[in-house]
Length: 253
Image 1: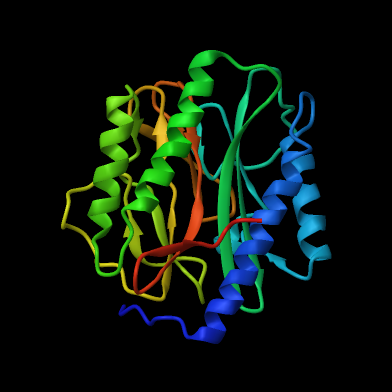
Image 2 (image 1 turned 90 degrees about the vertical axis):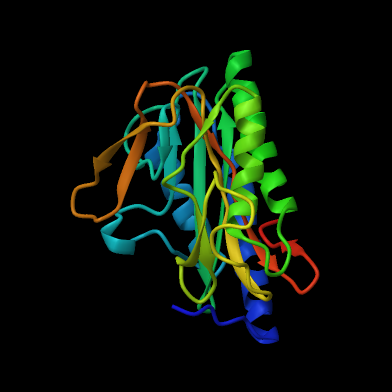
């Protein structure tokens, strides 16, 4: 499917949706603590999102039954909120997507629960830096492989691995659009980035192997994923507008 650039009015709507998602993520971060359940975090985001006039985009998407994704420790992405309590030393990625006025803003961050070990802190920082380095590669008509090459090079040099099969995506009028934005790639390969279109950059960084297990979510075609070796995974995500000269990060509060 050909990518249709956003017009000026649509860009304004994207900016509003993305700012909403960023503020929602900032809001829920204050509640991440020992003994809170991921279900409780989900309800906090659900109620807050509705109070802003937005809609939780994940809820009901391909049968997904919750408002957010809560990926704890070895869960790579799409973790399903439940009655599990967070404990001291956990790490948790919270993925928030807001739908506002027909447009979608998507963002995530990995948070610590109480005091975590130095290895986990390093993994989290590498995931954050990998996202930011990938974003810095964005310019009009560059290739998605340029982003993946930079993120994977950085991550592997730090002793970690990237998930190759799951990554970022186009976003705007729809929750998920073309192109696929990988966390590993070759320069000059993949899809070209079109000015005035949005993508997410969200490399998933594993402490150990890049292999993962796929786990079904009852009643949904969405799956969640865990590291094959049970070691930690971390992720950060921004929605980014490709401009005619470079990029603009939209998911900032």
